[in-house]
Length: 66
Image (cartoon, rainbow, N blue to C red; front, top):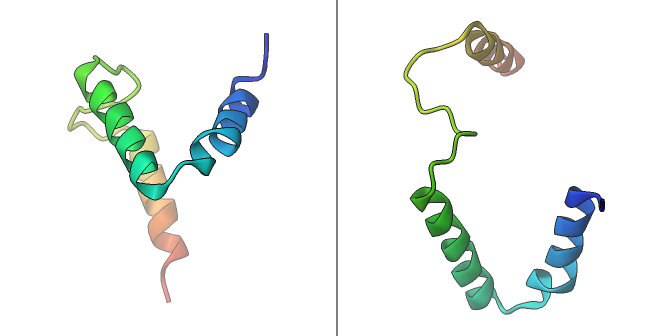
């Protein structure tokens, strides 16, 4: 089975990257519209903060203290 990441990068470099900007934007819109029509279970839309969420927020905040 081919490496999916490599395949996606190759598609981008060989096909998408060579398209004019307007076509790339149109393609991006098509992809995003398709994703919003699907029940994408990878996106957590709950309002509940997990311990991992709080840890990531704290870590990010502490990195930006001057």
